[in-house]
Structures are given as structure tokens and as C-alpha cells.
Image (tube, rainbow, N blue to C red; front, side, top):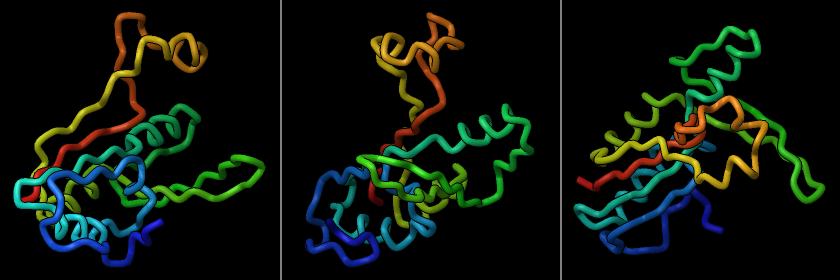
Length: 150
């Protein structure tokens, strides 16, 4: 596993595309990681990013009767248990922090997408998706970005 705070073991301008799937939102400061990814991307190369949708937790807080605060930079901690092991997961958002970090690192945002869920998800997660109209397939869960290296 590569330490996200360390230089990547690749030369400058080595890649056409880099994928960062559901990883950046765990970092408090995206700057050093994005700068290092930008270094290894060719000019015009793409960084394809997926992150937890930052608004979903604000919405869930409001639904639980808590006073949400979307625009402030915050750290959200969740406890996850997998394979009998528990760990605290730390998430950082909101959206403006993400987009500002992308542009500061030398990327141009070419796509932001709230992807649809697959139709089979209704069968797998009937309770979670029962409130969503049958004709609507988009929901707040993840955001996808396509970023181009300037």
C-alpha cells in the first residue's frame, strides 16, 4: 500500500489517467496528495475521483433532528466493524473544500456527477430505497468527478 503522504514512485508526466475511488474524503488536507497525483499525470491527463456525497450526512443529521452545518469544514467520525475488527473512519467535507483543493492542485473540473443506482439495488436494499420514487434512480450517496490536469 502506498502512503498517501509520501511521494509516488513514478516519474513526472507518467500517466494518462489516475483513479482515486472513495479515498480522498478520508484525508484532512487533500493538497499534498492532489499535488503528487498532478505531478505524475501528463498535461491534459485525467484524475477520476469518487467520494462520499458531502450533503448526505447533513441531510441525515437534519432528519435526525440535529442542527446541520454544511458549509463549515468538519471532521465526521464513524465506527465501522468489518471481519470482526472495528475501526474509526474519519471523513472530511464539504463540497467547496473539495472543488477548491482540485483547482489549487492544478486541475480543471470537467464533470461532476451524482450517479444513479442500478435497478437491481431496489431488490437488494428495499428498505433503504423504498422512499425513492420508482421512476427516479438518482440519490445522494456518491459524487464522481473527472478532473483534467492543467
